[in-house]
Image (cartoon, rainbow over all chains, first blue to last red; front, side, top):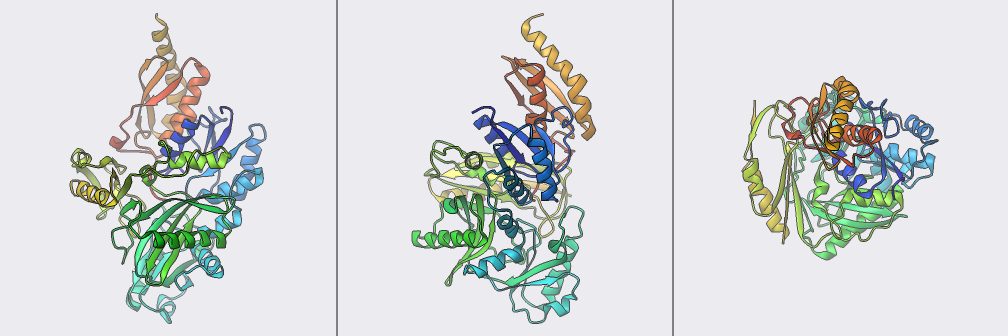
Length: 411
Length: 95
């Protein structure tokens, strides 16, 4: 299948680069990598390196169209929230396989997403968009507590804060406003002018990883999140699949996700959905037009060992996929949270953590000397622990034991 | 000079004259570790070590350049311990 050219949109700071590049290599495609900043080697390798302005999808699509005039592309894949909308616009322009740009855009604005989901009859928390230039005290009037405040466009719980009363609402409002001014936050338009306040929905939280083909959702994995996510911040830690929820309940979660995709108009490619579950049934919190973030996809294997990224690339290329059936064994990941702000001086216990039965690997992604910023302002993890075992309980236990063996020196 | 030694020498020259001057722009450098069975083993240092974009640099830049100039090279492999990088040009994180 050599000679098939695939464009990957890879932000310079994404965790997803290695796994997508490995998948492209496995498939033997002619890989072109585009980032938002020029590679030092772009002038020397102009057939495989490209710079695209991810903040301006139309300009990026024009540049990609110009570039591909003499180098036809068979597929384009964005690997995260930032690049998914860009990939959709490029795909539309070049007649490649992807969801419509408007549908992908809707997933990038939590207010727009809530509106689409609600209009489609999908259960979502009550919500309100609030201008960031409004006085927080005034904005807090009429709010029912507990509620959750969040930026419109950031991902992975960044800036998501629970408020139980007006004082906490005002503090959270100010904190999100300051967060959106940070140098490492690049939001524009409505995302820079508003935040979302919504009803806090109690209950269990799960994540569903899926693949859309011609509007049909196939569930690739349903992850339980065994650590309670009750606030004030919503740090994601452990994901374990398969879910331990009863099959009938899992079906309601799948149905709610499918309804969410339909309401948003998503039709093709990976989706990552976050849902809550309580006595009222499933609530759709997020549907993202991308695959699971961080290095978490390494928990997933399909058929005889196919990775999630290989499935995504095969789908984009229109190539056959032998199976979308996940392996039988349980698997899980722990995103190692940053416990406090400071400078990472060192770490201990990595080999001891790796030696825990069922633990497959421990990847420390933070580097010595790195400035660590915890949630809600932070945007990184210390690393990831991966485990695989016979049961979800065994996997969860292994992740917790391995984490307890790690020690991080933070100055 | 044996064929293997000659190939190693030509890879080294390419690194010295083309690749390293380019990656130096981000404070990085590439070191040739060995060439075995037409496979090139490299280590990345400086700003490249632990960089979130190191794989892009390697696969779509360095490997492409080496294979274009030296078609007998079958693969370029990164032996860098990226977790030990202390000054990566880009640090990976959530988007």
